[in-house]
Image (cartoon, rainbow, N blue to C red):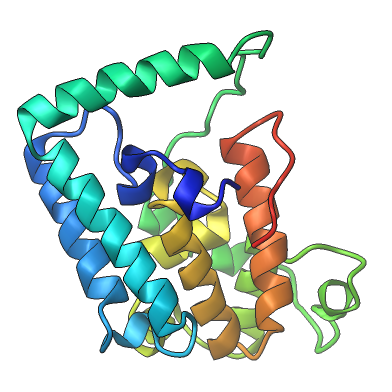
Length: 216
């Protein structure tokens, strides 16, 4: 996963290149609500300095992309930079799965096999990386519903479903996903840093095929 300062403005806001002005505005508002100093969503997960850096970058991204002339100039610059950096790079990417509905994700819980108290031991021991299945198993073992987890973490139920299903294309920018995973791990008493590292490595492998994952 690219560090925040290496992401382009679209990646920082978690929006597609063809995003409308309304999508840009909503993404910026979400960032402000998530990383403002009194936000419960990032309390204790990011330092004040990290929050300020994220807000500064998202403000720059918004100012550029919301202005038509600045956006056109930025898109030309971005296209030129990408053409230079993609020499000899494969462009083939695996087909992404269809976005699952919340109902289809939630309905799968009834089909899970019975799990004992040691179901998470392979993940904690490091023999298996923490992934969406581990997050779901930990939640079910704790007897917490998606609605309860959403209320506790202040994360939308939709995003919690996508985290567990590893529907990476449906999730927002990586900086938000990292924060979401840390909040879920804390709520479920999982090792926070290990869980975030494992999950974000899988996220990076799926969203940036062919690139080695960076540190979190």
